[in-house]
Structures are given as C-alpha cells and as structure tokens.
Length: 274
Image (cartoon, rainbow, N blue to C red; front, side):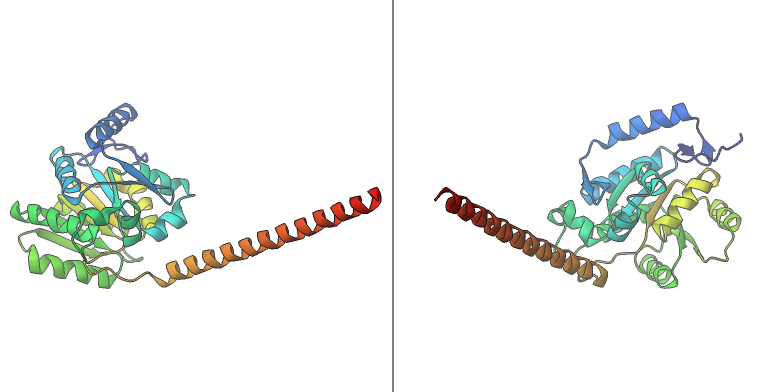
C-alpha cells in the first residue's frame, strides 16, 4: 500500500490511514483521554498523574497505532508557539506532558510527586519498569552525546532486560539511514531526544515510513534532582520585573502630571471667576 506523507495522519505500523480515519482516531483519542488540559505559554498540557499517563501509553501500544507523546518544555513553548508547524506537532500528539519544572509548576504536577522528584523521571521509571518485565524493545535516537550516555546508563543499570538499539542523531546521519535502523528493530518505543523543531520536522516528513509502536519526544532527559531556575529564565523574569517597574513609574508620573495640570486649570478658572 502506498504511504502518503501527510502531516497528522494516523499510522499503524507504517501504514497510513485516510483523512476520515484520522478524524475518527482523533475523536477516539479525545474520548479515551477525558483529562484536563492546562494552557501553558500557549501550549495545551495534559494534567495527568504519572500513573494515568503510563496507563494511557500502554493502551496506545496495545492498539498497535503509531502515536507520539511530547514532553513540552518552556523554551520550546516560548519559541514555537507562533509557528504553525509547532502547533500541529503539539495538537497531533497523543499526550503533551510536563518536560521541565516550569511546566510542572504551571499544571501543579508537584502535588502528585514526592519531594525532589520530577514528572518526566517518574513517568519513565514507571513505564520502563513495566516494559522491562515484558522484555520490550526501545530505540534511542538522541541528538546530544551526553544525553545519549545518560539514557544508556539509566537503562543499563535498571532496565537491562529491554532490547535496545541506539543512534547518535548527528547532522551527517542520513534520514533514510535513520528510518532503516529504526525499522530493523521495529521497536515498541522510539525514544527521540532532540530539539522540538527537529523532531516535529522529522515526524511530519517521515512518520509514515516508521515501523514502531510509540514515539516519546523530548529535548532533554530530566533526572530527579530538580535544578535551579536557568539563567535565561532568570534574565527573562528580571527583565519583565524591570519593565513592570518602569511602566508603573511612567503611569505614576503621568498621573502626577495630569493632576498638576488639572489643578492649574482649576486655579485659572477660579481666578477668571473672581
């Protein structure tokens, strides 16, 4: 069967469905989910406990339809919220989950987590524990070498029953080579760690060729130790604070000047009446 490369179509082990089936799939997905979505920086994020998110993930795997899950982080949401391709990428995701502490705070995910735990780490701990028992297969496609090493170390130490393959997704790696490597394993989970811009383009252009059960997309592997606020976020908050102070001072001076002018007008009117 010829596979049309159309963004957003439902996929079953590399087979693309028509637009009507896509609409049907979307309706089913929404009916199954029935969970609250919170708008964070223009991105609709699923407000789910990690256990519920993992249960939905397993359900998607059992249905043998290619779905992808996005772990949204703050920089991507800020930089991509006005881009149509990014919006499509987010809208077509089966789940959009917190990918950093800022998104966690926005959806109040901290109320579901133990002290010092992160949403992403808890999600993958529970998911990989279940997949490890089933001797499931995982394909790691990671852009940064240090992130790839981190993921490999976690799997080797805690989930060594998983069948796994890996590839360092560098610029000189051909897309056809990537797809062929993925399909040779036909993994249960395709684990992509790269920029959301790069991942959205890859899925848009090549999802129809991929033979995998589910795809998890994230920019960075988040561990349990929550980090302090990043420099760029700190600078952004400081800038907003200074701008707000400047605006308040400007409004105050404007009001003072306005009252002074009104007082002068009143005095002038009183003088003329006398």
